[in-house]
Length: 251
Image 1 (spheres, rainbow, N blue to C red):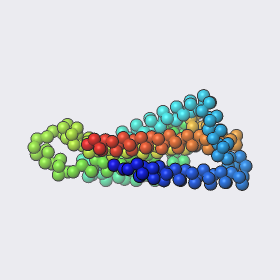
Image 2: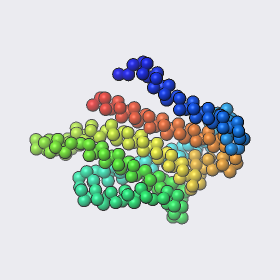
Image 3: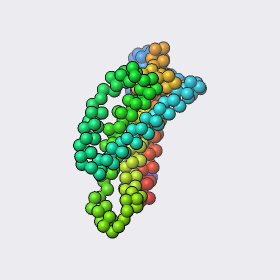
Image 4: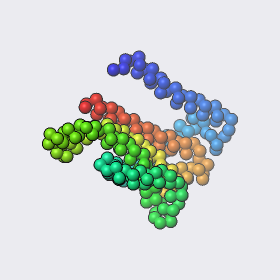
């Protein structure tokens, strides 16, 4: 258990980088104008203003919904591929090749191609799923391979069926790692989704609001929206990290 002093020190260490960023930001704004780098105060006022606009909530809802859909697709595919890799070495060779190809895909080019074939909504979801799939696959594969083969063989010798193995051995062993993968995956999905929405000019999206702010030279508004997006991503990642830690302690 960490002492109260350690917790305070850790909190200070977390605050210091944010304080340095704000200080450098404020100093930089003194040497330019609001159309290039607005001050911290101007951005804060823009942040407050963003929360009063209904179109922001519609855009946020659209982006989060697409993010969840993209993550569900990539997670399901990643788990299936990781499971096949776990049970077959031949499958691992094929799947590793596919994952390498997906890692090499140029995101912007894929978005542009998909825009010719589908709508901007579908293009954003598909490209985000494809880009996140390799990372999620690697995390789930590591989790599945962390289960001791010798233990599984011994339990099978004693007549333990696959259903019980899955419930009492595999699930507890991979759950903490899976929760971490979910948190990291959702956070990465959100960042990539916004990028894809910017490129695809997806309606009712955070990406569309960023494009609109850029066209209208509303830099404070743009930074405010980015700050909100970053905060949501960090919150999701930290929440699943804490949940993973709790699950690990219960076990």
